[in-house]
Each structure stands twice: as C-alpha cells, then as structure tokens.
Length: 298
Image 1: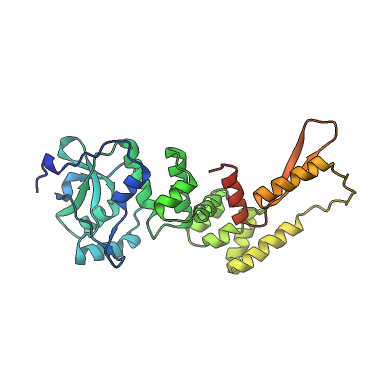
Image 2 (image 1 turned 180 degrees about the horizontal axis):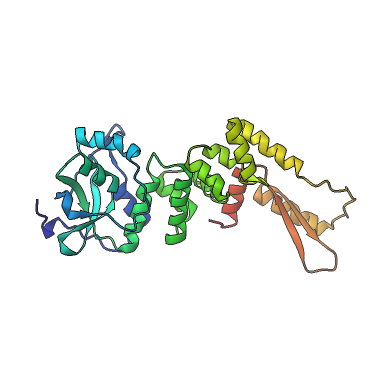
C-alpha cells in the first residue's frame, strides 16, 4: 500500500516528555483496559528499516516466541512508530520487536504512526518505550532512566510524573547502578532480584555477599540480615570520649536544621576556625531519597 504525503502529520519540534509519551503509551477504553490505537496507515514490511541506534539490541528467540504466536493469531494491535527516511523507506522509532515478530509470522504489512521526530527525539522515544516494557529486568530499567536523565536532562520527578511511577521507585532502581558489574550481571541473569540487589547498595563487599545470597538461595529478608551482619562485623570500634559542649548558637542552628529536614543534624565547628563539617543522619533509603530531593539532587 502506497503512502501519500497527506498521511504525514507534522507536529513541530521541541516536544516535551509528555507529548512523546502520548505516542508510546497504549490507549485505554472506558473500563481502563488497553485498546488498539488507530494507525495512520499500513506499510509493507519491506519498506521498514531498523534503527541502528536502538538502545535495545538483544532479541532472544525464546523471548520472541510468545509475541510471534500472538501476532500470528491477532495481528499487531499497537502500531509501530516510524519516521520517513530517504528512498521511500521508513525508520522504526518504536516497535522493532513487533516488526521482527511480524516477519516471522509472515505478515505482509504492519500498522504504523508516522512522525517527524528529529534524531534526539528518536532516541528519547525508543528509550521511553523500552523502560515501559514488562519484561525488562531492574538493571535494564535503571539504565533506561539514567539515559533519559543524562542525555535529555530529565529529573527523577519529571520521569516519575510522565511514566506513572513513584519517585522512590525510580530512585531505588538508579541506586542499583552503583553496584559492581558482576552483581549487576546477576540481576540481569535473574539470579538476584531487585530487592536482593537493593540490600547490597551500601555493603562493604557487595560481590561477596551477592555470591553468598545466590549460593544459599536466601530470601530478601535474609539478605538484609546478612548485609547488616556484614556491616557490623567491619565496623571499627571507636573509643568513646567526652564531647565538648556546643555554644548556644550552634545548638540552635542544629535544632533549626533538624526541624527543617526532619532528620538528625549535627554541626561540628571548632572554636576560632572558619571550617567544619555537618552530619545528617537518615534512618532509611526513603529518608535519603527525601534528603536528595530537598538538596536538589537528581
């Protein structure tokens, strides 16, 4: 089926995250159930090309089997998003798995939405589509959020609002990226869950603990206990010594800061000196998340 210029829908550049999300997010009916979006047009499979910069590079046969079976029986319910390129071809912006499944199911054409995205928007939409996939592991999802933040300047708050996630969900996943490569590989392989991995973020030797968790088949709660026990075993005992009395101004400032942050704040300032340090104590990862938000960290 030929495609006319009238099927093109210029929308202008500089679209925000919410506008890009509208193209990727499936439409819902009145009962809140996912419904098929009406495509702009049907395009022959041979007129479509994959995007070489697609962030999702692995398409395993075993993962594609269910999708191929579904496409064979019901066709493609959600249109691919494409943009026109040279030679009368169309580059896939989102939906490469559906395109590959359609080829295996021997379909001749697929439904598409045609957009005029620039190169940056193509990458952004591809990442957005990927982080919404149900089959992503925690590390892949976290990497997608990090790409959106580093490449496009989105904040955790902005992503949470647009993607319908809680900010703590995004923040907790991003912390996983601080783990060593071998631990992240265990999460990718399904040996460790995201819950297991979170217990290791602040551990002294997360690789050793991760191997122990896998070998012993520990639950998340048992992994938390193991991490706490390891933290206690490496603690260096410090001889208690009398703390000097703080002046009234310092004590008052500590009280104000503690009240504003909702956490224990200590000021250490030696008399007669300009420098010192401040200690903020948090009791949970949620409190740390709140602190980062108040300090303007993304």
